[in-house]
Image 1 (cartoon, rainbow, N blue to C red):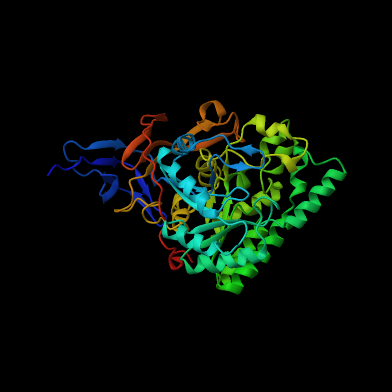
Image 2 (cartoon, rainbow, N blue to C red):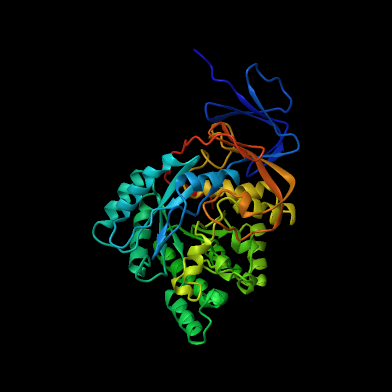
Length: 465
């Protein structure tokens, strides 16, 4: 029987979510097969990747991506091929997309249509389902989705008339996903408070992009988080909060965990690195996202919880709109597309600010950006780890490389980045997907679409609490 050749990553410091140290990493047939003492004998025919002076990490898992996403009159511009190209350049080797039904569409139909696109990607992907309105078919649809490995279900407490779910729907969906080994993931903003704030802004002429920060205030988020936590506690149902944008919201979830609830906090890269001063610049529309960018004090308070353990994951909330789309309704944020491109920049901007500049450990970085996203989505240890048996998805980082972000050098399907001109330290230079070197020395060397839809296993909350 012919034995497949080995690939050995040699000379680097391996970084797992719970340890790090010098070692060689051995891969074969798309899997990690061994962690070896550094400098050992390499068999003839093996491919050697030199990682001397570099960090060898699991490829990132981005728990929050919107690919070709339609909201209102706008559709984001990327395909799976384009989104995952940006992802791998940024060190991410698994993305998780959202099957959000359009008005009148069933959740199961939305998931089935999107799942088939996974094979277009340069890396693997998984899906969150979504429920907007409960009816007598929803429980069966959720059971069918869970059997296909779609166990996390997105819900919104805002965007009335499009994707907002009422409290009865949230409660019933929590009950059902709980019993199916899954979990509700939820966008929390009080639609009533948001609507009132937007009306107030409109009445005084501040409803344009420059006034975005006032149109979705922090209290809208904390009020909704408190309400959803109460529903989850009444059902003893697990819950995951996406893109929390303030320390106050994070702390509500942390307090619920202390009371015994299985509850998780996600933050996204732009909420811990950018602030609302961007809305006072010459192109504020480029920074319109939901929730909006917060004050510098709020941003700093949120970032501190990356060190306390209160934050579970870091996502991108990637929405690949371009400046033409962003400018179309820049005078009225109620009609603008919300979201920023970020699947490629998520890991470098977080590494630069928190690992290189502020002492976050590389292991904690891996926990937040790879291991915990995989755990909370039923993909661990296949993803988010470089232990033997895991998929051979590896990012080799130069932790000292200094570089400037420029849209001209990025690979997402848009014409801007909110980080234009920022100096960063640390970057993935070689990325391996399924044992294949896809990016090397910052160049795409293999654009073969090998993406697979990843079915999630029933969620094991004992390993996450």
